[in-house]
Image 1: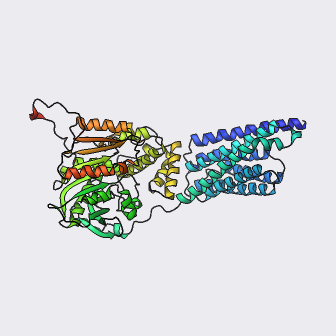
Image 2: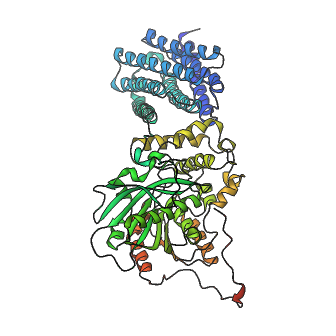
Image 3: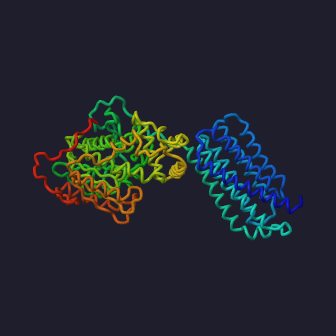
Length: 602
């Protein structure tokens, strides 16, 4: 066989190896591994193919490139022959192999005399291999699913690199050397190198952040004092929060409330009392301020944020200026002990009504039994359920108004429209994890792909708040795109019934409602909110529906903050709510007018 024939055969074999690497990458990314034994054969094939591709690319510094290929071939053979390796064995072998080859690649670059573009691409490849290997080794809790995704991403980059190199060699005659390759491939090499560096940086950063302890103990203040025989809303502990907000004195509170079964529990939150001015006759009204999703772990309690919490309480200074006492619950399981019942309406209502009681006790005679509730997103959901349950769960209180901003008003539609998106997967993971703990008839394993159950456990301990943990949280939400729900949760029992039970709007409450929605909200869409508004109107609920033009999900509360403050203050002053529901014909015989549905016992 002549030199030209050998060269042609080598190029063809290299192209085939690169194509096989891409095919194997697709398999690993599109068919997630459920277990380490299931991943082991694919990992073995990955390293055998990778090693073969390196040997096919031999040119110049043969000994070092041979070492690189030999390391990968050796790891592939070990994985092939190892009976049922554990995940820790897999991560150890994969991480070590990638790290060693990263070192070899960097040695090759240092010994090379080729141009800067080629050396940059080589260095980027070495850093990528080393970074991926280091990331795997620094992530001891990595699941087989995540390791398979890492291998898939690596093979994708390696396969493209092999194909580009093989293509260039195939196009250039042997007697022309490598100059045309360099001229034609500079841009591709630079782009590929930058992509590799980004992957390496992401791998190392994700490993470091995800393995950090993201569940610090909130502290002694949040620990339940033991037997809780006090009435719901009784204060258990109080401490001042310094430098919280101008115009008010803030207190961190621990108070009694109820859990999903009605048993007494300790919940936490913040109460802010206005400073200065005279107390009006009858006392100051209380505004229950319910927050949006921030996580389901104890460490995610908003009251832990001190002054940063005040920044998240949209409209706070306006409420204080209008002489409202502001009571902001953390919800059960955030701060206080217990599991957080995410988007479970009656528990959120219990905690909200009980912090109003706690605020009245804290105010020591300066508070009125009249209260309103306002919330955004998850807090809007809590506000609606508080409105539905206030009359029977807290008859001594007087609900004067409810404001719900971009509320989770149709859980089935919300889950379905966001299924497969980053935020949809993230919030879905929160809900599945929380409901799995809350309900005896709910099992996460019945609806979630087995491979991603470890990811759900990790997501459940990470807060949705600015900082390094947010990057890790979004990365894991991206991983869930590769496999999450086994079937449509909104149509699968018993999930579907639980979703329906915790969707607001089934019962009227005898207070005006302000419903605010952003027109550019892609998480809770305006058309879903309009349909909810129509259902409320048909049920006889007094509603004023407003849309904020151009507002998205995260900024609608701040854009509408002043509007909500004014609207609630007018309701407290006795100004009738205008309402936007179309007028309905009056029944001919009102003796049999519809009444509210019979409430459930909890």
